[in-house]
Image: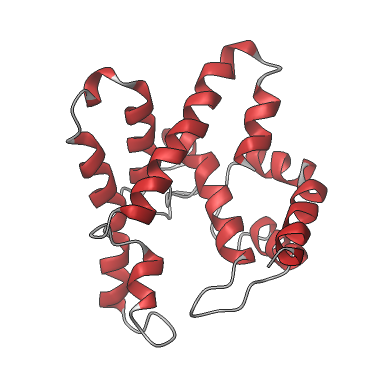
Length: 182
């Protein structure tokens, strides 16, 4: 989805650099989440458990990954001078915020959430729903879309939901290709 939205943004020159930064910054964020052994992603925490998050305390620990990732990025040399690192910081810190203010860590609402974090948040939820995890089976594309559009995973920017709806056939095809290649 990030690739598709980045492609759409090329038609709007004023957004081209921003979207390129979102795409590249997401790669930085993803790299940290995957390869940094002490970065507590939800998947790493739950993978150590038998099936599911079983307590409020465990969920509170999982929620710390936003601030830990953001703080890790902020400590990097040249953070203040590097737009990619600043965008990666926005993504790490606020990718669990929701349009209606019911996300975490800061309870940001609407356009107070950086667009980079909004885009990655929606892509992250779609990926989480359609991927198998140690605690759940993968949902179908149709089920994931229904859950997202019905607000079962939190509220998202209506314009981004429109973009998601516009590209859903393409997403479904990519998901089918992934399933075939497993």
